[in-house]
Length: 348
Image 1 (tube, helix red, strand yellow):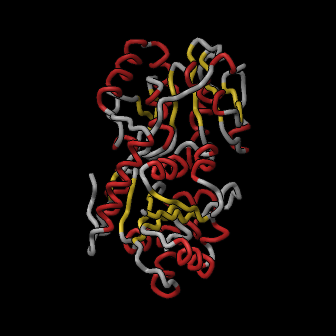
Image 2 (cartoon, rainbow, N blue to C red):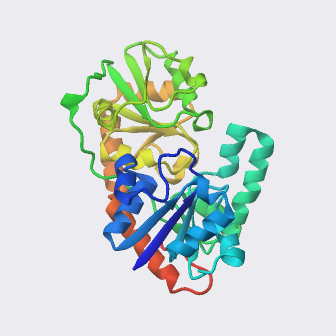
Image 3 (cartoon, rainbow, N blue to C red):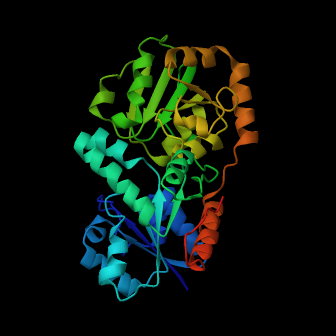
């Protein structure tokens, strides 16, 4: 039996050690929820340790000794060294590998949310986590390159996206602009979403931006006739809104984001921030990346041929895997990890 323990800094209270993979997936049909659920379909037994457990080494060590994982998968910076500490000093069960799932640039996020000093600390901690884990899985080419600078070779496994299933007839939200843009997901300042919201003030009122997800104060001030803040909506409504879009928007200076693969499933032109996303897209070929949203939006709205070519090229250039296919990549990597005694190399 293959045993997989997820150790995270999640403090939401939505999941704990008793939450089944099926229930986890039902509430979170992407990222860790989807990976965990599909690993169970491949023969793994799984468990989830939120902050209430992961932040306390003694509690975490007891869970490890009880569950006896083969793989401990850490996600997020603050608690990712704890399983290594437990294995060395506290656990009786020591026959497990600690694999870090590397997504965000922790120092940048912490500086944006908590300030400069916490950001400096997290930059320091991030390097310690990446260098000391038994292996690293990343969905970011940018982070893979950073790891190489530290002498660490990461396994690249992207986000997945299942073919969307939704009922547009059950959605009351109707997009009514001449050209409709949609943004979904987190809108915290470090995501830079406010920049495209600000651009909407300079565009004609019949070009509209619809945003779904948690609303922050810096976003709420941009609400207008052509910047429509929908807030949290049901998954069916979110997908139905995306299906109505003429273009989909991603604003963070990242080359990884769960929304990228989900957007690609809808076969819409993608408008993004011109920065690290160039590692994922080819600007002007399979996405339009910009730091001048006003000009870029006007260009998309006036050039249907460009929109069509971006979609067609993205479909040819960028494979999108189902979450089961992503879990199969994890399964293969974990199998290689368990038979490797020394440094663990890349899987792609």
